[in-house]
Amino acid sequence: MAADVHHDTGRPESDMQPNQVLEEIVRKRVAVYKRLNSAVINAIPHELAATEVIFGDAEVIPTPFRSDLKVRYVTLQDKVGNDIYVAIAGTTGQGIAQAAAATARVVAKCHFLKRVVLIGIAAGQPNLSDKEKDVRLGDVVVGDRLIQYDHVKRSDGKFSLRGDNIAPGDRELLDAVDRLRSLQERTGPEVAEKPWDGYIRRGSDKVRSSTRPNGDRDPNSAGRNYTKGLTYQRPVDAPFLHVGTIGSASTLLKDEKYRDKLNHAYGMIAYEMEGAGVAIAAASAGLAYLNVRGICDYGDVRKNDDWQTYASVCAAAVARAILEEF
Image (cartoon, rainbow, N blue to C red; front, side, top):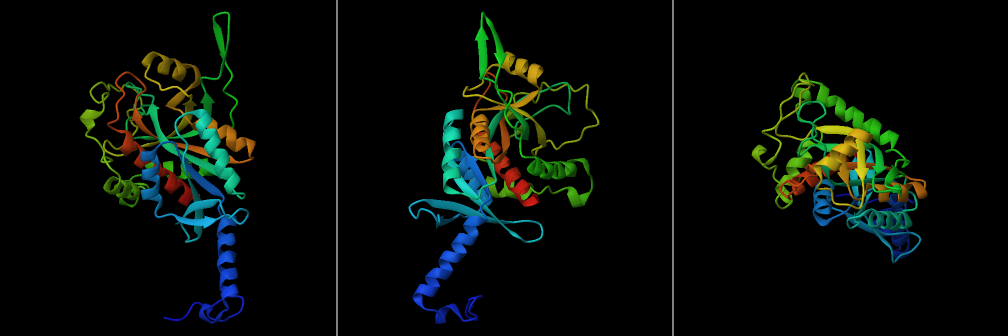
């Protein structure tokens, strides 16, 4: 095998002096660091496990500015074979404040970031009469708008929402999402396999308890009686990709009436606990963000953990497909 050649000197690296080899290693690290313009972040360990398996093995480099700060990153490829470097930010812990703090930490490490992608699980908004609007367990919701629904003003028994002025999801990434969603509108063998399907299979093989549960473990499976959206086609045993408004609060939602009230008032189709923190911290640093959520329950008293790990895998798989499409 031919020796590696140093591109500036034209000499094999084996012929270089130790200090030249070190300089070359540093140069390569800095080049990667400057191209780390996307980071992905998770809230809890099984979400991170899904992301690590689906995004692939991470490498570690020290930052050029402080050698005691390390950045974990993965290398993906776009459709034409260009390398995409993505920082893996780790977990935030549940809650808006925790997510904001974790976002600030990754921003402090990665000075060339342009966007942060939040990957995790959420409750979904069912619609048992409208097939097109029914968000099911195992589906993935990408937020084009985010509302912090526990940021309110209360006065004399009345309250008004104050958390509806958060910046929307990154438009360029949402354009990539729309290209992926367009595949759901097409038929034929060339689009039967979606870009995220292979990643879901990988995650289901390598993340504990992440096989898709049987349909009878969806508590809404027997109650669907669609009278609208009947021409809408979607798989019965695979995730479907939705785009819409996501509600965020540091509150674990297990209240069907309150969920439906939020949906009616603000059009929310998924509910989670970290997005507002990431969005606000990203905006304060001049970054864009995207919120990608796998649906694991319906935000009501029937909430359980059956679908959580599979939903994490689906969210990570879709997130990788988005970044590679972008």
